[in-house]
Image (cartoon, rainbow, N blue to C red; front, side):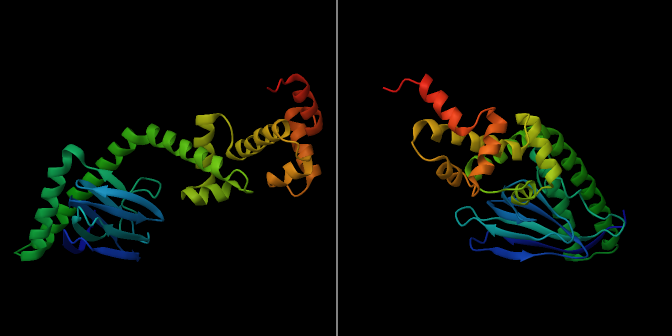
Length: 266
């Protein structure tokens, strides 16, 4: 694999420990949490981390760490040069992995790696290379396990999260790129995951959400159509009327008259 250990160190349960946002252009980092909990931000995404988590910071990716004051982090951190590989894991994969029943194995590898680097005994460089090779194999195994176990659940959770975001921000003129930027994912994946869950596109969902609000306002208030259009983010009332008519097959005024005629208010 042609791996080289650049450095290895420990953080030992320091309540106020944090490391501001930074990146490494030429090597990646592996972090193993041995105790405690904290929050890390990787490529703009926040993750809660705890004992047994293995973190992968690909080279060039921004990251920062913050320890919990009540349950401070203890961890190993290591810098790895890997010229034969562009990334340790693909960028679309989750950089925080649960080691679960493999926790002791991963901890033993870091313990040995730290010991070899610390004492620099005869042939320690070969030893660190071999230990790194085993560790990277475990990174790939855990990445595969985590991806397989969480793929469906994570996609569904993401779709629900997108819907919640749209329900809050449906009055904004969002583009698919805006939504993708908010979730730090590409627009195609956002659209794919949302459609698989709700059989609709995010942008069409926003439109239908606005029209549902419009129907509610038309029958529950006496507001002018131009005012309703403005409340829903449409500066041009005629454009709002065209959209409403296209979706509801009748104009806002026709809808209001029909609904009020059929509705019994107490």
